[in-house]
Length: 113
Length: 228
Image 1 (cartoon, rainbow over the protein chains, first blue to last red):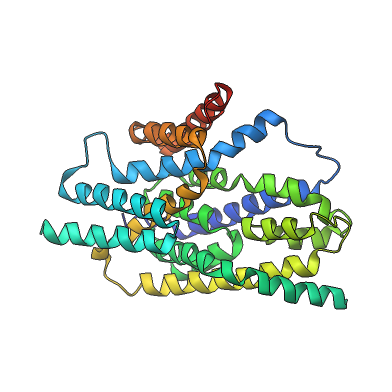
Image 2 (image 1 turned 180 degrees about the vertical axis):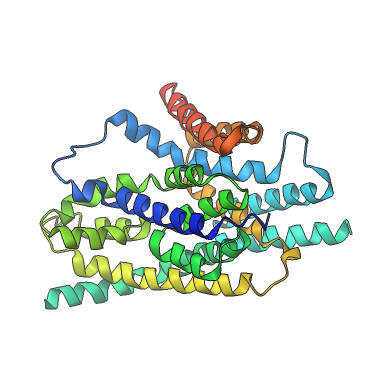
């Protein structure tokens, strides 16, 4: 997954765009208080589900592909992801989740040679 | 002005227990940044400019996959779009301040700072929240930046065979747990994740965008059909 380094100019532009974008999201209603009104209830309801949908959409393709787990390396990722999920639900701790998931990944990879 | 200082001290004390959790997600973002191909300077600059570890993690995930910059920006901002709701909710507390103050306070807006400020001042909406808010925000900001720097230093000093990039999905799994609060959010997660797996075949990394819209729509429908 390494080696896709964007061209330096692209990377800086990307950082600037992300900075302007996140700042605009934060300032939105603070800056325009009294002029922007409120969010339509439908939009507010949908926004509640955006974080959970986007996080799941980023996680699952990292664990499985359409062709199955994708060989031994892919199998290790799937097992490590499941272990991380169990630990996350039991402990609600990001540190424990990352530690358990990485330990499982390295363990399975060692076991498979 | 003494009230500003008293508020600042009180905020600083209140934020302390939150710092380890914030440090962990920031550390993950710091480790992930060089893995995705950013230089150490770009990694730290991104953290200071964006100051939103989950947005940064999402962007890095997609940069590492070689997705076009415009799609990286749109998708990462979708991860952060919930901050609009925080902005809406905290705006009344900031209404009397100058535009400069509003911009400065907005830069630091993040879930823990928002939640603790609104909880503290819900009963006295006319109070000056700036001291308390910055008392929460500045230690949190300093912790996040220090953890990112630590993560970058660690990441650039270990061999790539350790697959540190896998920290990113693991961090997302831990974050996901906090957003899955009832069955409707389970539906949104299952549909979003399920659509994303075949979605990787879509061009330009648009699979994540399609999957997010589908997952959020499924959550709204589930709620409408009485799932709880």
